[in-house]
Length: 204
Image (cartoon, rainbow, N blue to C red; front, side, top):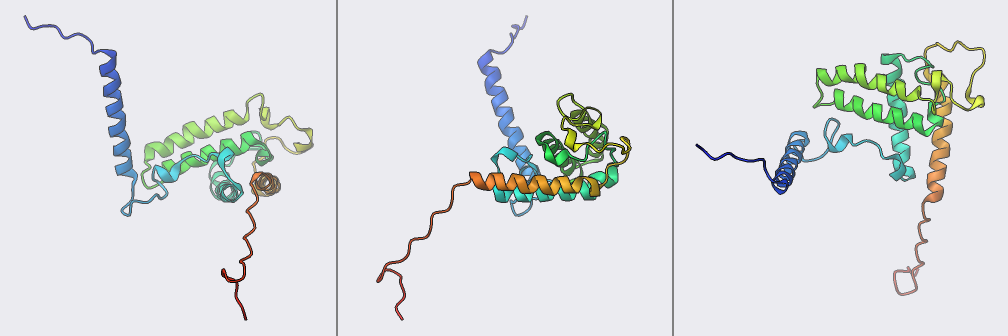
C-alpha cells in the first residue's frame, strides 16, 4: 500500500502562503501597470484610498477638490440620496469625509479601466448601502440628524433629496478650516541664506 501523506507542517504552510502572496502581488502589478509603467485611473497604485491623517496641506487640498467634484458631478446626480441618507453637513464631520472618500475610491475601482459590470453592480447594491449605514450609525447621523443642533434645518422636509447647493457651503467651510489646521502643523520653510559677497552675490 502506498504510504499515507500527512498534513503539511506549519513551516511549509507559511512558506507556501508567502510564495503565493508574492506571486499575487506580482500579478496585480503586471495587470494594473500601464504601458509606461506609471499609475493611472484604474490601476492599483492610482486607486489607493486617501489616508487623510497623512496628508499635508497641499495634498489635502487636492483630495478635498477631487472628492467635492465627484460628489457634485457623480454621486448626487446618479444615486440621488436623501438628506437622511447623507446629511448636508457631512463635510463638517470626519466620519462624513472618510465615508464618502472610500465610497469614491470604490467607485473609481468599479468604473476604472480594470473595472467590470460585476464591480459596478456591487458598488450600487453593496457599497452605497454600506455608506448609508455608516451615516445612520448612532454616533454619526442617525436618521439623517447629526448630534450638533446648529447643523439641523428645522421645518425642512427630512426626506428631501440632497442637493449640492445645500452641502457645498459646509464643504467650503470644512475645506478651509482643515487646510488651515494642516498648514499650521507644517514646519516653516527655513529662510534662504543671503549670499555673502564673493559667494554668489552680484556686484554691479
